[in-house]
Amino acid sequence: MGKLFLVPTPIGNLEDITFRAIKVLKEADLILAEDTRNSGKLLKHFDITTQMISHHMHNEHKTVDQLVGRMQAGETFALISDAGTPAISDPGFLLTRACVEAGVEVDCLPGATAFVPALVNSGLPNDKFVFEGFLPVKKGRQTRLKLLAEESRTMIFYESPHKLIKTLTHFTEYFGADRQVSVSREITKLHEETIRGTAKEVLKHYTQKPPKGEIAIIVAGNK
Image: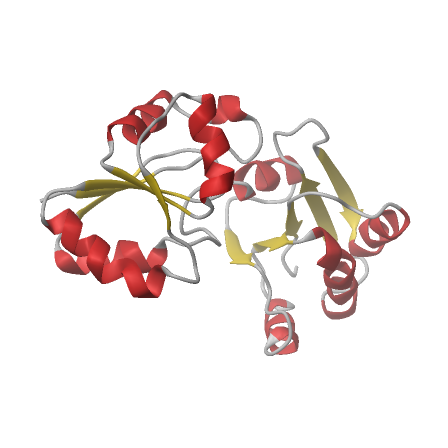
């Protein structure tokens, strides 16, 4: 019986990869990558020559059974996403579930993920929190926001730069203009920044200074 390793990769700074992650990627029979072009740069940097194939949201449904069968036959696979920990707002859940159901061992390495530093940096309560990831784009968005308006725990969201203004606007409408918000972008990268304040203040900042890069939003719960 083989094994599946879920291997976190750096969200920006390549020095954030662990020694163990490099070892697993070098010793695996195959690396399953969300985007082989993106991951190829990482593998080249660390002189990892393991064969790599694409495994992403558009093909994972079709390949899960075959991959599980190969692991049952003795192969060891390493699954990576473009950045951070696989299956957290990235592909990985379907294959992990299939492995568990088939009796294939799954081992998730500790490592980089964007929301933890964003949460800690925010200065907002982190003893209890809820991870929401990306909000629905259209259908169900309003319903979700109305429900979350009553959430008492700190909330964590991911957002793309071109949708940040829309999302912050919705936060002011559904959560209130005075709700505390912290926006972290480009975490671990050269232009990393965290902007904290009320929803109204943070919205004004990014309306005047359009954001770039990957974004994590931390929102205080309803008091």
